[in-house]
View 1 (tube, rainbow, N blue to C red):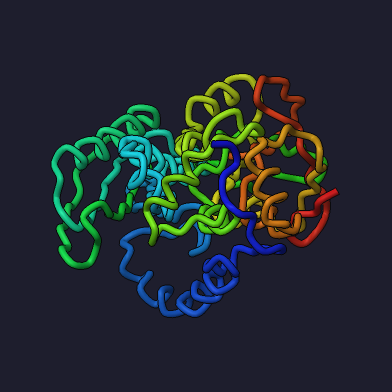
View 2: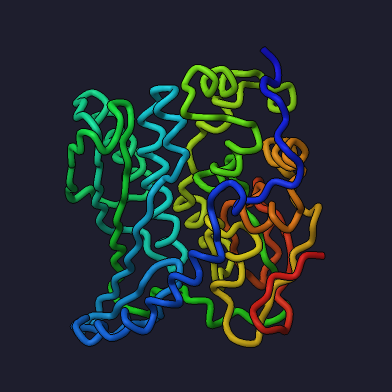
Length: 347
């Protein structure tokens, strides 16, 4: 079956699909002050504030820790339909480790939480096997976790995942915090493998997929799209890339002044998060290849470009700022740091 499903109404948005990025940002703003009142208990010195890719804490002994937690979101639906549970385990690890990698952490500890309607040991093993694969790729140790069985809360085929990582550095000299970024430096984008684990609620709306009707959902996910060269399910089941080795390879040859992980908030709200005061970044459209899944989403849902920018990575999963001319496969010069007040400017 090719391109199954009736096209949805025009002008779809992420908020219209049920996810409000602005409401999430407001929620963080509302808790920021109360959360800060607890910082006196750290037993160390916070190096950054809530809202970074990861929270950084310097201990009295000089050791620096980076903390991050995340989930996989509604991409889990692909595992429920396909049975590819190992892949979402990799996604979970990648979502946590890539945020910590932004600051230069390349070793540490990972913990997980799995809640299921019914405990299925084979399924649990597959999920955790994926996490372990991710841990090997990131060189983080799996220190344990928690499994909960919630009958009546999740359906038998459903579960949810959360991951928590702690990166470890010997001292703050090894941190990459972006302070050395200055106007004139280049922004390089490293290719994504597709959607990674963000924007899936808008994807489901775009293709008119109703998970309350498993037969309909399965039919539409298994529809073949010539633009993709495979089924939609095969496309969206590709796991998130772990960027550790790629960054280490770049760091051996080039100066890295700062990095950004392109996850929730897309290209519109992530590249600037590592920039120091007085800097913005100008990103040139057309300077990297956009995987066909994004063009297909935009066309089917008549999604505005601004909505695509703040929802998806659009083919760029990670960003490196450098003064050097980087020429490596899968790395694209997508823009330049300019004077400004922390904006992403699309050219």
